[in-house]
Structures are given as C-alpha cells and as structure tokens.
Length: 312
Image 1 (spheres, one colour):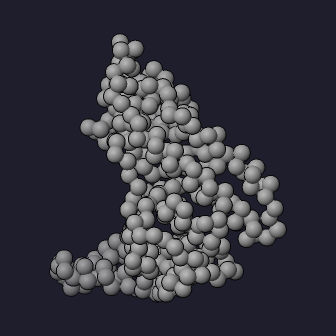
Image 2 (cartoon, rainbow, N blue to C red; image 1 turned 180 degrees about the vertical axis):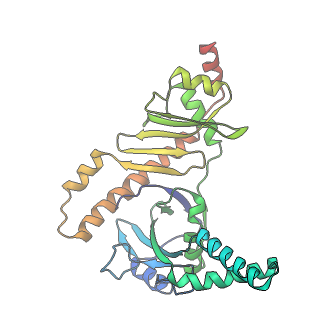
Image 3 (cartoon, rainbow, N blue to C red; image 1 turned 60 degrees about the horizontal axis):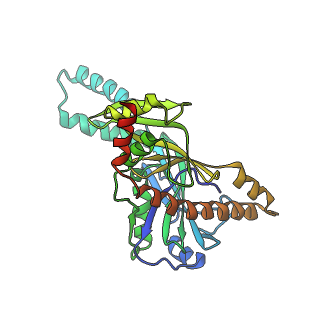
C-alpha cells in the first residue's frame, strides 16, 4: 500500500480509537451502489479490498480507512442533444416557442429517464490516522478533492476536529529562493522538473522538464518576476515528489531503497504484504513531513539579492 500523494491534516482532538472501535462507527456509513435515480453515493469500504469486511485496518500505530465513491456517468452533452430534439418536436407540433421554465422541466424529466441507464464508476480514496504524530494523511492531490472525505468523516466521528497543515512563509516564494540560490536545505536534492508562473498572470506558465532546475536560464525567468509554484525534489534518496505552492505533495515515489526493504520483509499472505508496505509508507511519511515543514520555515530575501548580484 504505497501512497501516491499526500494531503496532511493536524488532529485537534486526540485520536485514540483502535481499529475495532473505529469499525463500530464506520459501519453506520457503509459504501453501497448507486440507486437508479442517484447521481452518487459515498461510504466506507474495506481498505484491504474485496473479500475483507473490516472498515478499519491497524498496523504500527496507524489506522487506515477507505472511502468509496460511486457515481453515475451521465454526460450533459447527451442530455442536451436529446433535449434539443424534444424541444424541436414539441415546437413543431404546437407551433409555438417553449418557455425557459418548460425547458428546465423537460431537462429534469430527461435526466430522470436517462439516469438509470447511465454507467457507474467507483473510486476509492485511502487515508490513515497516525496516532503518534496525531495527523490524518490522505492519498489525494488537492484539498478540493478532500472535501467529500472530510465531510463524511466528521459525520462519522462528530467530535473529530482537524485542520490542514500550513506554513507561515509563502511556499512559492520559498521555492523560488531555493532555485535562485541553487541549493536546497539539508536532506533535499533538486530533481529535473519545475513549473514557473507569473503571479500577475496565472495562465502564463513555463514548464521546465529534463532540465537543471538551478540553471541560469531558469534563474533569469525568476529574477524577471516569475515564481516557482511546482518543484520536484528528492528526499534522503528515499522519496521523489513534487511539491506545490498549496503544500500538496504529488507523484510521490518510494525509491528502490524502500522497495527493496519491502521485498525483504517476509510476507506469506496478501495481508502481510499490505502491512509490510503500509508500515514502510507510514514510517517514511512520518519522518518526511517534519523535515519538509522545517525546510519550508527557513527562507530569506538575502537569497534573491545575492543571485541578482551574481547575474548582474
């Protein structure tokens, strides 16, 4: 079980549930298929997958849960096309234009007719409570995608209080300073990718792929006013990741060092293998996050001044 993204939340109320205790609460909001007239359903499912019943799985001081979302795929283009045909037929038959109110009523009627025939798609989002650090870690790439998870979680655990982890400094400003300086804080290394953006024109974006991030060409763009809002880095030769200016972590990759540790762990069953990977994943993230937050808390305008002088 390797996470591909990290969204981290700080728990403001202590999380002390065992997997068994949490199971008793999650069972009240189980996942289920969409009804014929339902656009989507949300509910908790077994993290271990098909064939397992437990909705909470504990290993090494962390409890994993999984949200299953099922939704009916009804393209609006299909609704619009059929709506236009129906409107034309009625107008030709009655010899009059249909009002906007009648069009809305027809659209609702068509939607109800088509929904039961629409295909369904299911997605699963994983998250775990780290009892030691008192964090909730979600395998999601953006905070906007976490809303459904958080809402259902707080409905399931009414006393739960949490907040997204933030840093005081502007992350884009800090990343920009690191690239201008050409040096990262201890334990981090540049990788081969970054994206620059003009803060005055959000759509003015430059992608730098397979290129030295600390090159003079990129530095000149930054000194001209652009900022780094997405930067790929390596941490301790163990994690490759892309950090964005909203503190979301994407394309998380556990390097061969960690994959080898997982292979060396004795795993007689699929559950053993799941636990081996989960324990390593949780351990790396638990060590990585404090290191990243510490690094993001150190930046200085002197970095920009020194770079401007060197390139003058």
